[in-house]
Image (tube, rainbow, N blue to C red; front, side):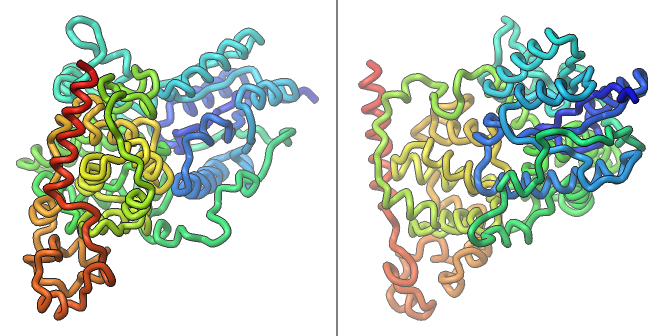
Length: 492
């Protein structure tokens, strides 16, 4: 009996059924050709290189959720509806096509250089074999090549970039989840189980805090979006910089893995504004954060190597310091700056950190301590559940002063002033730095200024129960400014 023709749906960072253009195209092809869809995920070197400990944990949970969702929507029941492979993606896809009647392959586009180079190569090879190959726009509202300056170049500054985006046609409405998927039912040589990916934390499960904070998968993303829209969006414009209040959407890891699309988020926020007159400002503020995500991918697409090469070339001469002890103290939340330590401990426990605090902890590392932004990037890559090839290096280059639209290097965050402004009662610090929970408000962000009597009453012994600051704030600022001047002299 001749097998039905197969359309491969190659999932990558688009682990959802709703609003998935490549999946809809594969289903349409299968209907028109009396065929079946073969959903696959390939853990290839490109994807593996982009995973850290926290994102590995998330990926395993998300793939399991997607497998169940495909099975629930499939025309045949199977506990292996999503076929898993490990190895070079081109080799895997060619091997599947060698043994099965694969006639088409569909995927949604990615924008980092390793992914685009891989996809171009695969499309060329498969088309040479006579296969239909289609890539689709699904993970950005605006393609990087769609947004150009008046002179036809790519943007380097966010505000004009976002204004240009807003002049383009309004992003389409999201597509519905397919009611049924005609699944290929046979065995596939080389497919493996999810445990063979070896993504789970070992030897102990350190991810309990991640599990308490997040629910990976498409349904988790949908629930997170609606909870945010219903309960927190109303306060977003006024309170989004306050880590002591849960106001932000926390959708970033779901967007990173494509469990929800930016189109779904865009339209949900705008529908909220339409239904709530007078709330347009807060919805616009939130949608502008989608704009930053778009901008990061725009920069990623046009950059040679966003992870390692500063966008501003003069920073190749910056006199970074190597201080393993200080780096370790920063990683573990033992810098002696309370809001910095609170953020780093939140990150370690939950795989997440409030965006305002990310800027503060980054500034301390690269400016006061003069430790290379790539060291911060590497730590965030391993510990953040939302670490992605665009947002993480883009943000660290911005913090380091060497990225696109970066604040001047000499704009140095003061962690005390930032803490007093955005965590005025110290509630965020008390949550994550419990050894300071009994400190009075006026000293919670600067315990070194408290008298011995006040410290004793709060049960704090600096240097013992809580560390003294790694560096004086004035000293660190002056050292950073001096390094900046040295760099300028080196450039000439």
